[in-house]
Length: 112
Length: 117
Image (tube, rainbow over all chains, first blue to last red; front, side, top):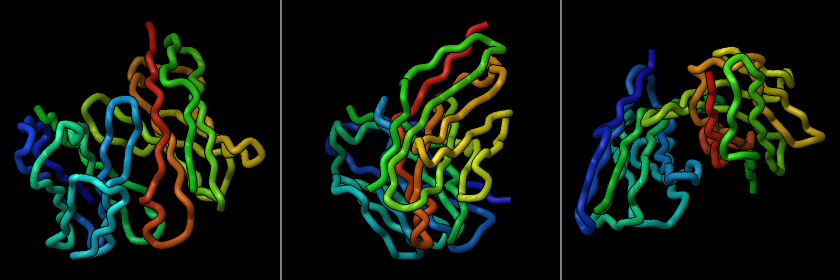
């Protein structure tokens, strides 16, 4: 069966520090991969999605970037964190075509 | 552009009472619609999905939702609430075009369901 792993679960970082969140998927090949951010009371916002290695689409301009160095690995990064980057970050995957999203357990990021 | 509106950011029911969580959508093409549930500090779990087959969709944990095109609604219901249903619920819409569109969901703001004993 397919599983998705996301780490770390929680992270507290100072303003201006770098960020790297990692997500891996097991049990499937060539998945679509997604990064969402959830801010309190504001629903989920799609940040990036990827349909293949090295293929990244950004949905909103921001202080973050994403990379997909391997088929089942998706990384969310920042060179310098802002206070506004605080939130709950969710990685998700779907099969190519008509499969719904499957979410990881999320990373709670607090920028201080 | 598609959008989702969930009416009521908080809904409170008694254990055993009917649960009704409202969702209205807008989409320029026939949509795919989803309900997800999120427990504290966890990811989202798919409850059910509508993909242009039967308009009444049954999901996990006794939940169901009915697609009503004329009302552009996809309300989530459960006949009898359990304490374990307390969570946040998200409605989401996706258009059908493109291989990636299924995952490019637009989410509502969420409804927090509280269940009282």
